[in-house]
Length: 113
Length: 117
Image 1 (tube, chains in turn brown, red):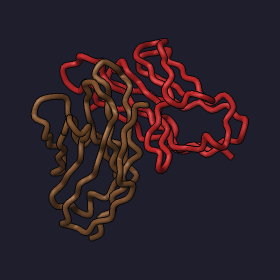
Image 2 (cartoon, chains in turn blue, yellow):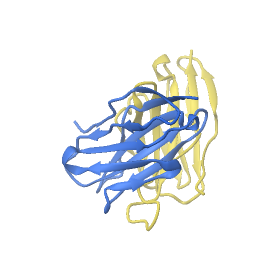
Image 3 (tube, one colour):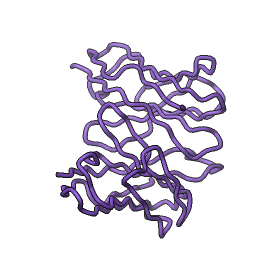
Image 4 (tube, chains in turn green, red):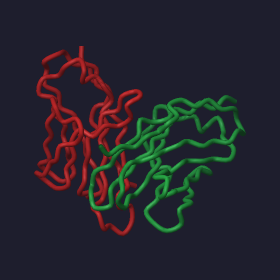
């Protein structure tokens, strides 16, 4: 079955710590990859996306993600987190010729001030 | 900016009641989606629609139906609500494949939190 796995369900960091959230998917074909973020009480919003080209993509608020095709991974990183990064983060995949998105189970990030 | 508006933020219904969740988008998007969001399970696709009067089942369609009579509106219907349908329901839309920008990017509504007693 097709799936998206996020290995960390709950991460607690202190401010200025570095962040890496794992995401793996199980599709063999061409994919588009996304990270969405949901701040407390807010809509889900796009953080960054990868369609093609440079596998290192940059998003809003200093986040970046690296697509490693051989590992079927799209990990999210940020060198120095802030308290305002406290949110839930979702990895998502869409197969190139389809309209259907698959989401991971989400990672709750709690940044302590 | 695309706006996706869900008519009800909070609803409380009783078991067996019929529930309508309405979603409207204002950017002429072809694709619309209904997800439910549950802690630890992420977002699971209930139904999606890629055109007026067209619908396709997602991963968990049982107990739900949808209606898309107009391009901007996509309704989720719970014919007979049950307690296991207590959840946050998210509507989203996206432009069609091949759009020059924003293609394959979902825009979400604020969500409708449904409690079934």
